[in-house]
Image (cartoon, rainbow, N blue to C red; front, top):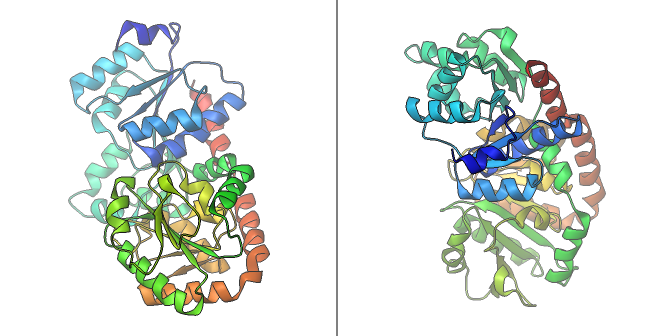
Length: 384
């Protein structure tokens, strides 16, 4: 840790918050905002592992934290050096991230450690819920001073492997707070104006992974037979795939990239970072990727925060709680293949007057779900 960086902390012990990449940053920044809103004036260090995580942190939380660093390699001597340099008042990590050496070193130094917005995905549960791994998992999770979890199922799973139930607190999903803070109707309306032809319905496939684009394009082809005015926006999870995705679109459709946007397109490929959330707001429907591919699903909260109904494939393990809620209220459809997706799209295109219903469902859901960030901060600040 360079002396120049440490000077920014003014000699005070910082609150060290770690968020690996984009998703974790979206969970951590609302917590930091809650701390500042509650009057916390101490220094805050935010660490990430990826450059995209750093960029997202600066975009969402610029001015809220005092110093960004890249997280050290989780080996004893590296994390010990970082802890001895920063002397944090507490260490906080987000969602699913376990750093055993960091947690051990925090315990050695009596630094309280917390998991915020914690979740135990089906995939993680499958790994730790075995006779040979339960004891090890319990030992690692028990190194946290307290764990703040998204839902009751997460708490039940940790208790089942042996974590002390007194450490487990179910507080909700802080990403809900992040979404509500990010919503910008003016930005959404700006995209609507750029896209033109507002009478043509837009269907979005967001955060798609390799192998999913073909199915989305096939579903669009089926839809166009019933709604020839429909348009499709595809936002690959990794924008560098934009060229490969564009090559999959049949020549009969006018295909463009966002970076070279002009009028008259049928299919638009998003080749920029940081715009998908606002673009969701112009859609009449959104398929969310990572769900045909076995990736656990991407963030279905984002489109629904705009009142846009969502669809996804069989894999939505990482957003299982939201998925269950959306399906129960009729705001989502889980589809097996491109034909089922096309069927849902066709029904939505035929029921274009349902927009206010979707928006009402969205308002009700988010009104019930917000506030996790402040609840988390209120518990952590007792240790500072």
